[in-house]
Length: 354
Image (tube, rainbow, N blue to C red):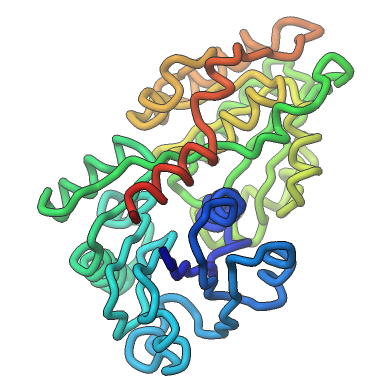
């Protein structure tokens, strides 16, 4: 079987991680692949593989050129394949073979306040286009599946090919890690991530004697543009026990996860949510909001839930978890370590493509 894969999202937040981690398992299969994307980025990935060819493609996803003027030479190669897979809901125009897409979440119609009226209309057009053109649709949780069906109906087969975490998060010798007095937040700094709730809880906890730092892995400027009502608070945050790390490599992120006393994920909306899983695999406890998808994904894990949007309850539970002076690394049983894996995800996708 010959499969064309749109790899332009590699290195682009969680969307890129999903494909990046599945790709090695795709390439270990007996199929032939044409990988659409940045040749410089993809060439090392396929250097030792004889079943993959890179198709250099500078066309930006969700652009007008992608829809009406996609390069003819690339289209010719793509249309010679048995199927086309996109890890997001953008599809180049004039593809004539069966198309499969992954829609990770349906956040914009569920939380329209995250964008403008025009932005929502444009995204809905792309959502509908992907839904209508796809032979099958993959998503990352039963929650996301239910929301896709809510907005677009049940006429398409939607397959839950869930997210996972990179195996190296559970590969370290956790007993050698020394915990530090820090609380960790990881995510893009948008309103749906609930950072405002965490800031309120953290400031109150500091007033009540908490002597921990809050480390935010995300971009400060993005926080300013993504949550304008809190922009004024930014100026003095680093003088109040908060450190902005910006975007960091995976190895540095693992170190932060392993050394932190607690990960807090106060999300208002997610399609899956990586960080709690990464934290527990790294030996760190997770305090997370009780949104439906977190209840689904982490209901069997040793996490602590707090009421979504309740900064007071978050503060109380945060203080309780940090009360122990020398928190020990958390250890997951093998059954939970293996519950989500990109190997399983890649195998499920390939099975459906066949």
